[in-house]
Length: 253
Ligand SMILES: O=C(O)CCC(=O)CC(=O)O
Image 1 (spheres, rainbow, N blue to C red):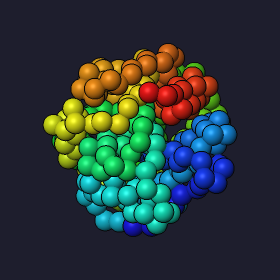
Image 2: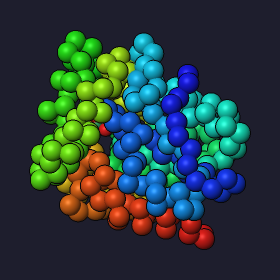
Image 3: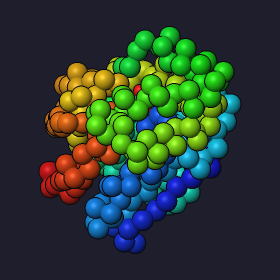
């Protein structure tokens, strides 16, 4: 699987991988890259079927989404990296921290969940998108992604609505099926990567209780709840998220 990616920042600096949520692409991280690239090489990529990464016929599993990241790291000769992900990106990060702990240094999980049931809802969403396309998800998704004032702002609708409508139908559906089949809870307690968990207080897609569940299971995890922030908290509260990420990735333990 060839992932579309961008690598920004000083040669030889530690690497931070940034992984996008369902229906977005690597530009989800536009507000993070300038801050992080002062100190890190920032490797942001598009999940399968999103942005510039082609979709393959689904269903997918987190094992494949995590495997895509390992293959990219291998291609670029990166042995170990910090990892931050929003929602589906965070699920990919938890899978990596559970199954390839030697490759993940510190982990930041933003507006995500280790158990986002019911599976039937994700399979229904996959079927809907295969029938009607990702365009059909724009109207219901934006009010979950942002608090009301932002969800209606023209530039936000243009950028994020455009990203979602441009996502490959099969890629989006396959990622829904990865969420339907995820099995992260049993090994959550085995994660050894120092972990920061960030929630949006107004996130209806992955409410703060999901972040609390992760933080309670991962030894030593730090939990931060931002407000106002809905599902795409890194876009809604970029300065707060940048501060937390920089602190987490540079802090001496
Ligand atoms: O955002 C994700 O990666 C998964 C959760 C989700 O689909 C949120 C939404 O679009 O409502």
